[in-house]
Image 1: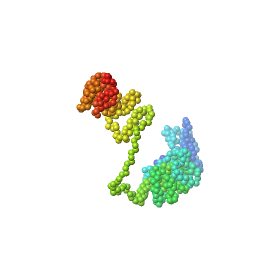
Image 2 (image 1 turned 30 degrees about the vertical axis):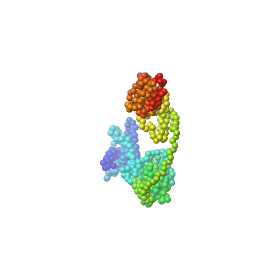
Image 3 (image 1 turned 180 degrees about the vertical axis):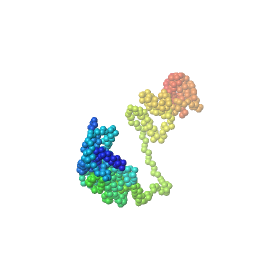
Image 4 (image 1 turned 90 degrees about the horizontal axis):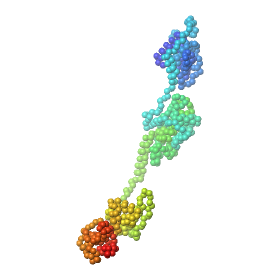
Length: 575
């Protein structure tokens, strides 16, 4: 309280005392929140409704002593019958100033001569003003003062290689999830519970941890620090200490870590292998044992550990589950320093192993061996060729799949070409054009386009070659007559040289046939229904057509003799 407030309080006390209403009563000695209790409650001023009586300010201090709750002495007690509407003003949570008599003046006792000589008269009842009502309402409605909690240790900005701060972990149901999810987290919990003296405190600490009563946790070498909210408003400062490892212990740990490549991979994957943590034979106690955890708490409980320290240990086990490097930091080494040291040792170990093995011999052969003459063994005799190509298997029809007849045609043709290549060493259709190959495939299929399967095949091949099915059918007849040369005779007229073509007409006349009309390499019957065509190889090919229709179709078998080519086309009377 400032000096101005003390003076104001003293002036008010003096004014009330001089009016005969009695001095303002304090609530006890200053310094204890719960000791500041009013000695007596004044009667409320008469009003239209009941007025709430002032309540003492709440406090987080110890309960008031019996001396502080006793009634005050007569010299400090207010007038038993104060004027209505006036009473001692008690601020909510504000300590009233103590009223002391001025120097040289003794306090006026009750019932003094001045008071007895004062004439009795009717007392005036002062009605409270609106401003005074607002002040009283504000005093009653003011929230109780709460003690300030200490500043949280959650300061991530101060973190470094050897200091890590983790935010407060959320509450969880340990009955469903377990206190720890990894074997090293459970080893930490086991060290805590086997070293505890009171299981009841562990149960309460576990409840604190499950309800999220532990604030941000700071981990440094050898120390875990956090604030834990207990039953009081002010949280407790809790520390758990663990002995750090020396340089010799860390050397043995790093040597064990680089012995197996899986150790480094497991650490990078936030895992702690059993073989790396269990190094008791090398004198490296990485995991704590019973009694290794040393708790310290600011609460008055002397248990080992208290429930607040137990709560911090249980939450630390959850941190170890997520990151085993927290345990290594507690033992004295940060994550980056450990990984750098492991990388250097692993590289040095690999270099030593390579040096011990020595240089590997380079693969290869000597130049003299390469340049030396070598006699290769003879090749084995080729296998005998099969007498004919085999038939392909039957292909079942599938909805939306390829035509089984077309597949059978392609497989049969591939087998025939392979057989010809095997027996003769030459592909018989390797030099054909697209149109010639389409005609060849259509000619290999019996039916001449009369069945449903061949009609679909003819339509597909003609469309691929850019022709119609009638042209394809005529070309198929020529192909069946004499192969590619017959197809050339069908489509390409040419001018033959003198000789064989000129001798054909006398031969036809000698056979009692009429004189054929010549045109280029063709000789046509006078009635226009029979024609002979000379091929480039000297063979004659016979054609038939409806008279005067010029719709020529190949017929018969090619022959060197023009009269022989007409054999089978009809009788001499027809010709």
